[in-house]
Length: 87
Length: 355
Image (cartoon, rainbow over all chains, first blue to last red):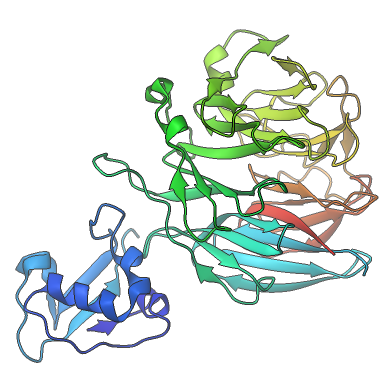
């Protein structure tokens, strides 16, 4: 998983984490195990992923692939990106 | 060791720290910390030297940060959390209030959605005050223009079990048993009654730091005084150029003196009369304009957390503006000088008096 922008700061400056995961949801669990400080930055108190969080699998938006259920394959890079909205 | 003042200046793009010299004449500006997050409020805890910052951010959600080394490094605290099963989630922190000296580990936070959170471990973790959250009248709380938040936490000078909270828009609630039970505390004396509902839009409620029971309150369209032993809010607005505003401060020793920055109720700036601090020395019966050194006629704006005082003698008074200025007076408001400019929109100023 490759952290971008603010999420790198939330993880104490970490750039990336390599882990085994079958889905985006599992990957996020592994990411939080590696960097517990990300737990509340990724999800609210009810476990819902926060808005303005973009997850891409290589070049594809995970929202279009099943979001937390989106499958992962060997060598995939999951990008954790602070999403920008508005104009 | 001589006391010094450090200003914690929250802005829409991070926290700035202005460290004053012993004479309060020179200020070293550091920051921004946490940019681009908005810092709705920051506070210094004189009991142990901690600093707290309400970091309200879209990316990663809002959070409360604490510094144990005077702002050199910061640590993220465990987020305030709303109860499971509801549809509310912690959105923002509006105010952080260090607890009473008799409860050294207690820190309070007011949030949006409007709720009171208590920390019993110096701000490391936070728990919702369920007794206030369970008030049936909560169903009548509604958002104001800036949202629906609990922003005022007024702790009594001598008894930590006695405190009031102010909510926009939900009025004042009072506890006298440390938060076990609460009552609505919105009885008014002497105010015009055309819009009693507007009274519930509390803008700032302050407890005097030395006199038990003494309160000062800035409401959407009025200003109120309450002396010890009284149970109603005494209308004290006559003599101000407008009845609208946010920023308010109480003199830390004088029992009859308070300060406000009036704004135009429609324009939300200090026009056409220009920016000025207004002082009462007789519990709101009369008000004097203090503007020596301030730019004449400037339509500046200072918001809810925008003004604060230090604890020195003579008292220093400070306010920040929407155009990124911080103004300081080291003679209780008699004259002013600009101590910072070109900052982002200033959302809060907190004066830390440091030994």
